[in-house]
Length: 271
Image 1 (cartoon, rainbow, N blue to C red):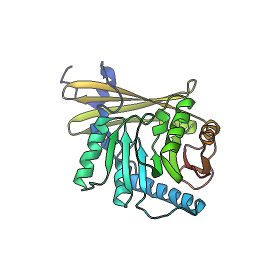
Image 2: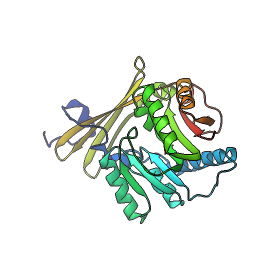
Image 3: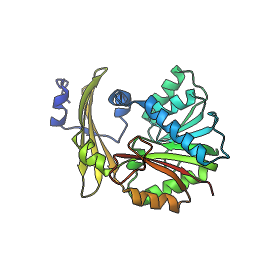
Image 4: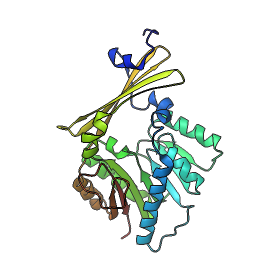
């Protein structure tokens, strides 16, 4: 590979080495996501937890509850929650992303937080959790509505009685009108990257291509996200034994609709 490639605009004009998602982008993930307001997102999640606590009158609202974050990535949300006193375990399928997460935890002197490498459909834990979170499109990576059903059953099994499960999904409206026009170029520590995003409406698949040029080599990751409807997702988690506390649209506390860009679901296993 020629080392003469110096401008991000060149990255989609050359042959690239195909690699799995998050293997090469992990090192620049936080730079790519620097516009995301993680503290604000966590504040919203904590408010959703408060809404759940009002519905579950027997639950304690103290912060030092056992919390599991699925698909925790580089730990941005897990670390904030750990600093707030939650006892956090983060699970992710990418060792490269978890390396970053562990490095940040060490720098922050958060020795209590634990990160585990595992696919979110096959994770094993002896612990039971008060709260399970799965955020930022992570469940959109599961292909097929049956995979969501498997995940919902698995989460139900690892929750304590009166446990709370909060997750979000990116919806078709977001793919049609926002993310499909996404085109980002950047550079960090000598690494160039270029992200392009496309929505295939016929298959309801949102694809993001990330090209990364580092040390004279060009890599490409293809991230596929699968779009589901509110009604089919609701049917699956109700079938898995969850009760719905709320489904909220677009970082509000208003009921979501099929036209929402993003929906946060707040569920409980209370019988």
